[in-house]
Every structure is written in structure tokens, then in C-alpha cells.
Length: 169
Image 1 (tube, one colour):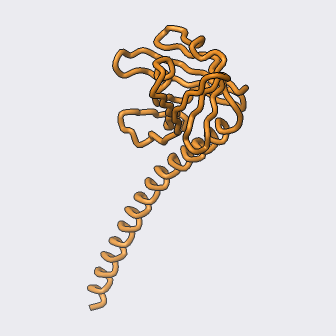
Image 2 (cartoon, helix red, strand yellow):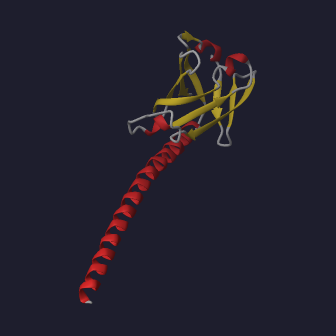
Image 3 (tube, one colour):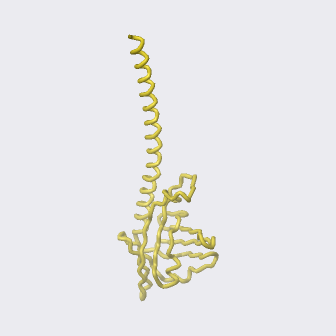
């Protein structure tokens, strides 16, 4: 009878070890997934804090190889915390919207590097005029510092590359 007890005990012990290993692997994987999301949320907050402070101007806008920067000469851009984007040149005000979103769940982007800015979109939308509508897109952040943010978008349709640079006034 004691032998039977040892066999049952050994089977239960083996089962418990297997279940513990499975739980450990599952929890480890989930923790790794959360870390990217947390990093993206930190990056989103940092970029939001940066752009909502002060007025900005476009110092470069290249639309599929064509330099269209002059369309925005004299305009100051204000990224308000409520998502409103206002472009003003003294006599004209153009209203739009902006946001920063986490696109790390997009399975079509297989970014194997750890740069979290690859997983966030800087979204701009202007309904009109046509020149401002050209800025409407979900941009990737190439680089940023306290006075400059550089964005890029590769069009899915024609494969053209657009770049947009804002600098703080």
C-alpha cells in the first residue's frame, strides 16, 4: 500500500511541476507583451508633452519628392491637449485635429527592432484647404528632440515617401 501511495504522489508531483512550468512560461510571455505597450504609452506621453508646449512651424514638407514647404510659410501650428490642431498666419486660421496612437498591435508591421517610436502614429487631419489636407496622414516619428520633430509616411497606394518636419518657434 505504501508503494501505491508513492506512485500517486510522484505522479501528482510531476503534474504539479508541469503545470507550474506552463504557468511560468505563459506569465513570462504576457509580461513581455505588456512591456512594449507600457513603453509605447510612455513615448506617446513624451511626444504629447513636447508638441503641446508652444507653437510650431513646418520647416520641411516633401510630398513624394516634391518640396511643398512654401505652402505653409508664415503659419504657426498649435497642438492643443484636447486634440485640436490650429494653423494661423495672422489673417487666416485653419482648424484640424491631431492625435498620437499606439499601432503596435498592427500585425502587418513586422518591426523587429525595439524602437518604440516605430509603434506609434502621429496622426494629423485637415479637411481643407487642399494644401493642408496633404498633411492628413498617420505619420511615423523618425526623430525628435526639444525643438524638432521629423515625421515620415510611405504611401501604400503609389509607394511614394512623404516627409514632414516641425520646428518649435
